[in-house]
Image 1 (tube, rainbow, N blue to C red):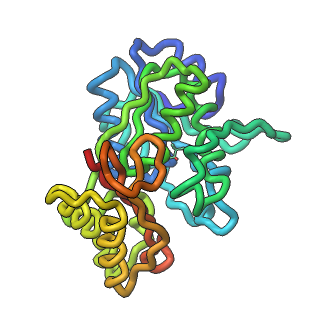
Image 2 (cartoon, rainbow, N blue to C red):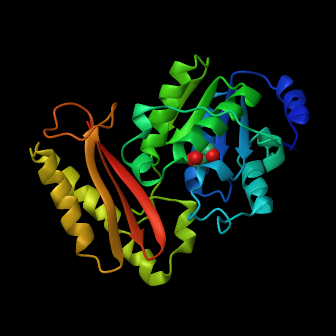
Length: 277
Ligand code: PAF
């Protein structure tokens, strides 16, 4: 496995990789969720490239950029074991040269849900992912369903900017008790970790109601709200039952829909979602 930092090194290493080339962009501190993306990429592609970059422009001023967990040595060991061919771990100066002022924005899709709570977040994500795509030039790129809005926004960007890249969205990886895997789970105290299962419980309850025939979106949102609000360590930021493609809130679930939520457990902000199909 080759590990490179500069763009020149990346271009040179990338030129020698047999295609199709699969790409898994990450912010490091890897868990089973990331590794499942690597496994999907390995199954579908002849070579796999992973990037590790904690992207400062997608963090808000009061978010956890400084505290975001990092462990490059461990990440490299896991990627080597997973059979990755090339890791690109650029510095902030490589990604954002002095005087940087060019941004990629997806408009409508970034307004609701995460976009409404985290102004500027998706502008940071789409800008860095566009730059990563330009540099790596993969045939397929792999993202997790856990960040459902991010996946939708990247799909839109890829279509709008005519990238010849297939976006593959892989299922959310969960702990045995249902908690969606996330690097931020490491912030949780033991009591908070237990309370954090409330997101999964709320989603499962609403999904079961849907399975039983409930189609009123406000009833589904209400069910999730009630469960979150009954957990003393949880503070609900939003619950949503939205159209899967446009992410607009629904009144009645008719086609494919997305249940999603953001919840603070103590100081840690967690998100999760469930697709109704
Ligand atoms: O999902 C993430 O880890 C990040 O948002 C991404 C796609 C690597 C961009 O920084």
